[in-house]
Image (cartoon, rainbow, N blue to C red; front, side, top):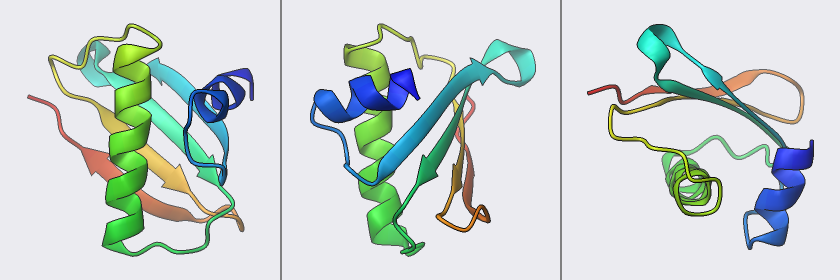
Length: 87
């Protein structure tokens, strides 16, 4: 919750209420994001993805040079998106 709060204070999307940053396979970052936004279309996801990754790089100092993984869960707890951009 603290990470999501820092994200929102830095100008992130207000619908995001949880972000967990952990290590995924081979040590690439895995972001788990919880949102109140029920819209699971491509355009809102692209906006969310760009916003979260920019925050993690620029505000949290995380390197995404090897790619990352992202899971996004909607308001009812269902998986909205699973993204794998490992290099």
